[in-house]
Length: 263
Image 1: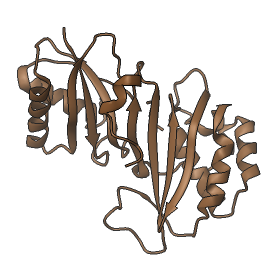
Image 2 (image 1 turned 180 degrees about the vertical axis):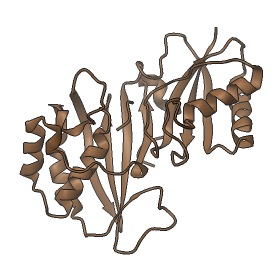
Image 3 (image 1 turned 60 degrees about the horizontal axis):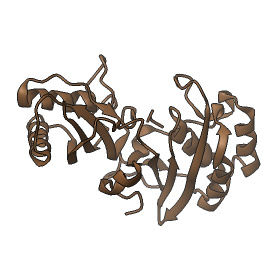
């Protein structure tokens, strides 16, 4: 049974998240329905990360085992045609046949996320569902300094959802950078894996630092407390983008983050 890997882009606004659920329309469900429409084959997609409702993706990766052999380009075009016909806000950017040892989730060596904040007094119109609007001026340099307290191997119990199903709250954060271009503040995070709501918890906490309500020391103390009640507010989902997944020498097909359980 051939296995196919697909690189997926989607607008998370209309969906209950990546994962198929009973309470609404999911990205996974939409793609599975498109594949079923092609040949009547019911499949279960496996993904690199399970993004929450409202979270977007430029570089989600999933795999599927199909009974029929498809030319990769034909598969991509057929799935995209059905998605477009159903008015889905999802696109398959690349498809290819891979060895059965490949697993979209467990073969991943690193995941990259971006959180976007538009920092200005005026409301946002065009990007209302693409960024977190923060009116009060933010000091991105203080935010970046505080973010470095979270880089490395730590117990991140403070910065994960109470619904997080991971048995171990310890993770290694390889990168957590805060930069600013005009009114746009970007928080870029990289790690092999993340906890549920981890990046949104980071973003909400770093916002407090940017506003001057928290210090760098406050962030370090919150981390060391290993207590969810010590976390800042969780940032809204619509500012979060799943940018890229690395698979060692297989990562060349993926979009660069510089051009999971969901965080």
